[in-house]
Amino acid sequence: MNAWSFDRLTRQGARGAALLLIMAACGCASTIDTDVPRVPAPWSGDTHSWQRFQVERNGLSKKVRFRDLETSRTVTMKYKGFPVAWGSPINLLFDEDVYQRESHRVRYRFQHPLTSQPMVLVARAKSHYVANVQIRTEDTLPVVQLFTGDEKQPRGALRYDDGSRILFSGEIEERQIEIERVSADIPPDRELLKYFLFPFPVMGEFVIRVDGQEAARFAQQLQHGVTSPYDLALDEETDQATRDDAMLAFVVFDLMKDFVNSANG
Image (cartoon, rainbow, N blue to C red; front, side, top):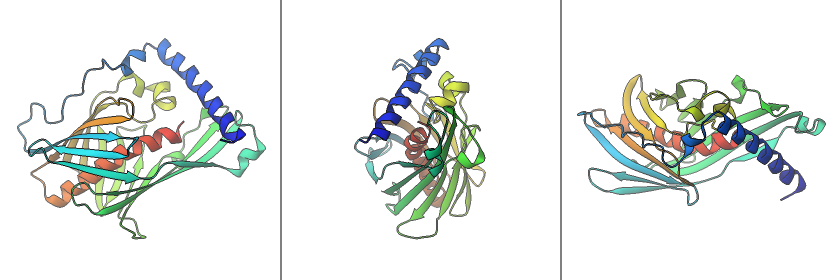
């Protein structure tokens, strides 16, 4: 690790410690305790026909396991890639505590959990800090592009907006896609904590819509260490192509968690 990287980590650590103090002062520390109640499964109390999965991603081994609760069949999706960041030339003119701009990128390779089709996810974002305060503009919102195999033209693109209930919106295979948070925010998802410590939702219930129609639901449970657990339900009354697109949208949500957090760290 070079001196610049060490200095940057030190500054981030100091900033993180200060924000943790803010969180404690706001009475929010208990919200990330392991005693937080489990978010109800998305099919709880619903007689609708769902294809139900328990999902668990391990960020260390880079594996996502999908267990079908009806058949007990488990599919493991492996992914490759990690986020990278580089500074703007303008950073050479200013101290990091005064002004800082960075570009962020990640490229993940994986196979679609339902179709086994090779996929590539490319995400880009920018961060902009003035006096260690993050400036948010349209230019800083993360954008995701999806490619099939080694194709050069994207099959879909989604934009992430942490200021909206609809966190992801865009297209996959020319179909409109939305991922909306339908549960109430918890304290880490509000105000300063949301923008500085938790730019990606900590937990909650979400709906995936394809062309305006609900195609899937999922509950994001509290992350434990490197493990991210979910309960996922695909609408069995939709066609297979719709379920495939909904599953791909869920994969985008899951894989983007690390990227969004790193781009805001």
